[in-house]
Length: 469
Image (cartoon, rainbow, N blue to C red; front, top):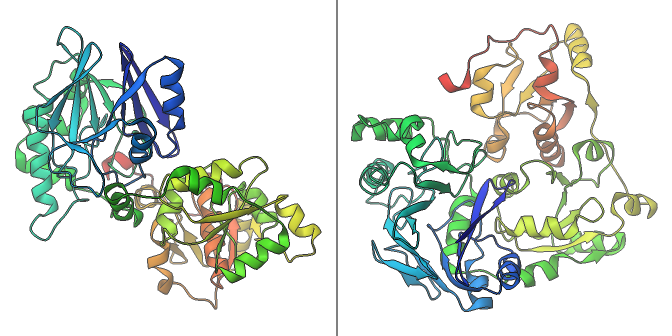
C-alpha cells in the first residue's frame, strides 16, 4: 500500500494518491490531472476510483477530467447530485482497492454530502481517514456553506457535531488523519500548519473534539468568529457539481503569447482585465495603466477568487518570464477559465513599443512617520479583521479597510483624498493600491507594511494575542 499526499501551498489543499496491488484511488484531485495519470503509469497501475469528499467551494476539482482520461468511477457520498455520471455511495459502503478497502463514512455538517473515507488495510484494520473538510488538524470545517431556506448554519453545525461524535471519534487513536486543507484555507478558522496527524492527538488538542463538549457548546464555538465566505466559494461549488471546460482547453487558450499591439487591442475589444502577477516591487515601479496586481508568490488563487467577482471575466496576463502556463493553471484551479493570453516579452516589450506605463509611489515606514509629523494623513489598513484587532496604528486618520471586502466598501472612501495604504508586509497593500488606483483613487503605498511601522515611534494599540480574540 502506498499513500502520497500531493499538497498545494497556494490553496492549502491536500489531494491523495492511494495505490495497492496495481489499483489506484485519487482523493480530491487538483484541476490539472495529468500528474496523477503519469504517477500511475510510472507504477504500472490503473486509476480505478476518484473519491470526492464533498462539493469543494475553494477550488475546482479535477475529478471530471480525470474520469474522462482514465475511465475511473467518481464516487461521492450520500445525497450528492450532479450533472455528470457518479456513483452515489451509501453510508458504510466499502470499495475494494487491490488488497485494501475504502469505507465511506457519511459525515454531513460542512456540507450535506460531506463524507470521510476510511482506509482499511489488508487485515481490515482502520489505518487512516481522509477527512475532507469534516475534520482538520486543530479545527473542523465551517458549517455555513450549504445553507438552504429550511436549513441554518446552526442546523449544519449540529450535524457536524453528530458526525464527529458518531463516526470519527470512535475510531482508534492511532488512525492517521489526512485532511483536505491546512493553515491558510478559508474553510476553517484555526487550521494547523501540519498537514498529517493522528486522531488520538486531535482528541487531546482539537477544541472541537473535547470529550465533555455539549452539542450547544460545539455549535456556539464552531460558529464563533467565522468570517463571511469569499464570493467565489459558491461559484466553485457549482462548477464542481455541474461541470466545467476541460483543463487542456483552458490552458491552450490562455497560454497564448501576444504582441503589445495585439494585447492592447484585445484588452479594448474584450473589455479584458489586465492582471499583473509579478512581484509587488516590480509592479510599483512600472505597470500597464489600469492593470491589477495579484502576485504569484503570495496567496495568489484565493486572492483572485476573493477580488475578481466574475469567473467568466476575460483576463490578460503580465507575468514573469516562464510563468505563463503556471499562471493560467493557478487561475483555473479557482474557476477562472477565460484567460485570453499573455504579454510576450513582459513589461519591457510594452515599454519598447512606446506604450504608456505608470507607477505607484511607495515610501518607507520612516518616511511615513516623517510626513505624519507635518500633517495628519488618511491611512488605510488593509489587513484582516483579526490582524487589525490584534494591533494597529492609533488615530482617527487610520481606517480599517480589509482587502477581503474592498469591493463592498468603496463607498466608505473619497476620491478627493490621498490615502496611504499598508498591510502586514507589503503584498496586500499593493493589491489594494492597484485596485484603488484603477478606480481613480490617489494612493501611496507604505513599503514593508505594519512590520516596518512597528519600528517607528508612531502611536499604536497594545498587542492582543489573536488567539484570545
